[in-house]
Image (cartoon, rainbow, N blue to C red):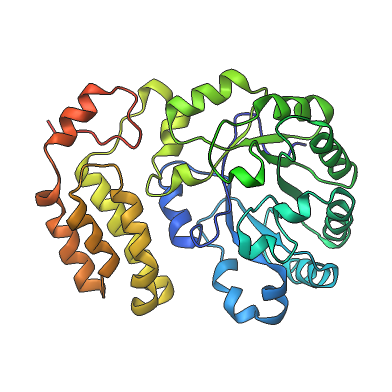
Length: 335
């Protein structure tokens, strides 16, 4: 049985973002398949207290995967055995993260380029996990698919039940076209599900992906930041109704208050500042006022900020939105 059914749209594991409050927000908008934040296996082994919040699964979560990153076989083995005591639906191995603090340790996309070692370490996960196992990679070259296909085939042979492919090389991070042709070759090369990842920010980019890709499963990453409604947008098609300004502010309130309860007010508000900024970005709020989100100090400060929001929204936004039918992260004007 396939790990994900055809048509599945997954929330990517996003370091610093996809905690329980974030996932509860996207769940409200129809997200079923979600992941924890990326977790360093060494941190899980030696500083388990710091990772415990990242491993928290809500009683209301129907499906949840956890993702590990590491280049240390002993730490991976121990971490996977620890995860056997947790309720997860899949353990995913990150071979695609391009962030320097990960790659300088020889992990993430740096490890993904070392095909034999990457497969060797993944095999440790597969051999020790009582959960299903999967992998997230990037293409290894824009010009030649051979090495990427070799990695995909070897991971499938080693027990991967699904492989997510970000269709950009690590050096491009999140910019530029997605190499759907290489992803298509991977779909043809193996019998397990291939999930396409990269560049899905809304209905238009999703339609372009489906027009060029053989995948029937897709992963949303940055497109969900400040926009949990993307899951409704991608699944409902033309019947999708964007949120109103009031609904936007209600969702911000929901997620931030969840964060304050989950982490405590002091830590929670500091973590929530970037979340608020994500929601406001590109939605017609005045820049100077929007920037004040970066200085929110406590719950009362946050609630006052939300109360001010309607007065700080530009009427010009509605004209811009009416003129561009493909605008991303659209708000619906109240009648």
